[in-house]
Image 1: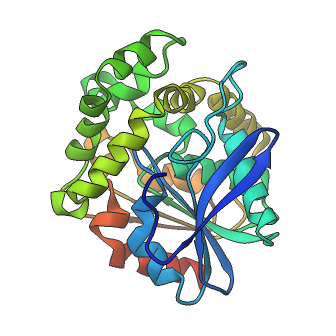
Image 2 (image 1 turned 135 degrees about the vertical axis):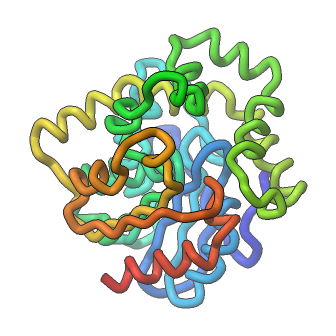
Length: 292
């Protein structure tokens, strides 16, 4: 088993046929679910979760395909759609006794959170997304040589076979690259935590690739259908992200506002792994969101 958050109880919960999620749970009060990103596990929330657990029930799962959660084979391209992964999260919260909950996600977890908010508007009361754009917008802004920063998106979008072989040949070099390149404060991810992320990712290459592959296929189709239907996130939404708009030439707040009319958008000065690099800032933003 991979490391979990100190003081949290480890739970295993069946959320779909043959799929069990691993989750760390603590606290009492209104529920908040925290979803991790790539290439990490729920452990990335260790600072934020401990603070929120003082007055909330905090649920930190490993997403399907990551960490200690089950990693079903993707036989038809839907097993790692964000719609499927969002349904996991709703089922997890319900199994733990929560019909409605606030939801925050970082990176891949933020894409799952957005899909949960669109698909389950009566269930998600508040939504926070850390350092992503919605899938459809992400692909639209990746142009020219500046898109090289997202090379992994294109690699893992390839048909099954080659990406898994290439990444599997040197997984620590691949996943470690992102842990290093996306962090402004290396001390924010101590050696033992970095080792835990690398081991968890090394053990999950096919499912991580499947998660990304879905974002170049079925997730785009779902987003396009929602955009055509005029669907938006009805709950209060907070977005924290690095100033990618300045780097890649787009208005991040405007892109988000098209999906989230009740939006609080702010840029941060820390690196990508903001829940570890700037936990106080993240906690303040989440508490402000929950008060809206």
